[in-house]
Length: 492
Image (cartoon, rainbow, N blue to C red; front, side, top):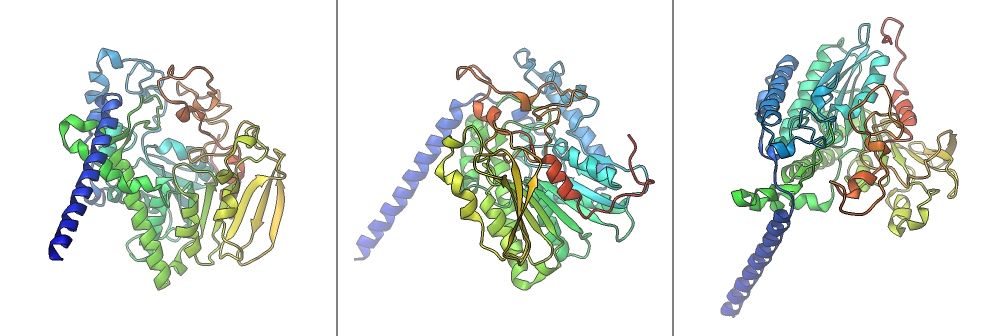
């Protein structure tokens, strides 16, 4: 009997080893088939860790940031081989998308100050592989309302994709604390402090807000605004660390990357390292655990109101997790969730999958709820006219308000990346602002042709890049913020 058990154990272990070897072999094969790594995939700038950032002030962080960009200039831009000195490469100084040629390099941290004394402060936290560019439109609106806007470049971002191969989520959170310290320093005690987070920045905003409930050293925000927040990720992210194991061997360095793509976007990485997915997953796990713990001991009752904007269709984060891992735990504190439905009147509506068409009904918990729920959707299934359907907290009745905003017929839904960008954004907008030019208009591209001719796959170009409901979203964010006195209003 004991011999049969030992044999079974050996068989099981051999099976596990065989499966693991097969998966690693497949991963190595898949990675080796991709394009070779370039300078910007191999050079890692020298950036501070969490402990160092907790001892740094804003001026020190900006000085370190300037050093990082100098490193990239010397180690990447000035050392590019001839074959990489092409217009499609953002690291080529002669490229139309080279960030150094623009009046403002929005990859860097920035502060927008009102003309008069600030009546409050807002901290802006961008998303993964992104840059402070992504929240500049909302930051400008806060400035017009008399707030000082502090937008930090999170470590690992804005320079080269390789910088994300070594960063960890604790360092992102330390940078968040640094930005809050600077914002708090610039306003009077007791003045309102808002946290605005996009995607991965949304997870950081929530984690900070929760940490502040348990640590008197941290300034508590009076409001949290989340845009496509990374509360939960797809299942693959849980195993992203395993996908990068072959990269421990120098011959298989490509396995440290989930995608290696040309870098033609001046303010966002196209390439994506395994470590970035791994750290994002670890952050969401820590956030979900903290939410559950604080819900259990009653500390969530002290949380400020949370206002979230989320597309029902989101390929990057799970909309269901926003509900199940966050909003289902929130107290009745004035929070609201705004969902942008798919376009049921789109020209492509006949091609929508059954899962997409029914997703909204499947993820929503029934009323009453402790938060206000708002759905922006078609007035009728065959109409582009939109309505706002809202159910107040603790209420059963849904109220409908017409919106004078059509859903563009060519859009069948919004996307994870579209929400913070208005239609006139110079880079991502469908109608780019003619007063700015960043070398490429990604929002106007509507490619048609044969496969294999472009330097990137069509998936990267067909995703919605801007939000036709941006003005509605901005107006909802501005609700409840006192209008500034003339002394605090910003000039032209």
